[in-house]
Length: 133
Image (tube, rainbow, N blue to C red):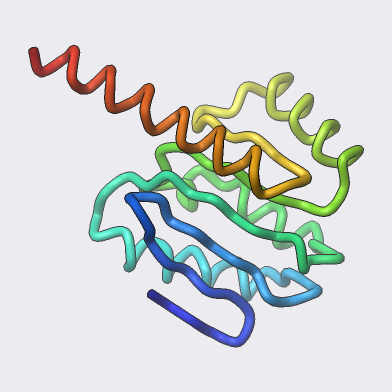
């Protein structure tokens, strides 16, 4: 587990939980969080749930860093939790329209985010079982 002033990261049941504690998600916090996420991943792809409910503002520099392909390494699937239903809907349409490689979905609530990431994990486990048999 990593617990810092601006965020915490822990792995529970093979799911990495990133919880942001700050109101403004700066580029520096994003880059530090990515570095810590990669170091905690033990070089294995991770299912990630990002709780961003405390964040009120994400400058474009932070959003740009999150979108860079080199910062998406070791991410198998991502569920992001934000405050707004409207913004979650718009971002999900954006993700569909621009066809992101990593399965990602935005949620306004924790419960459906956890359900979705668990379903993704189970689908991948079934696929892996079929490939090994």
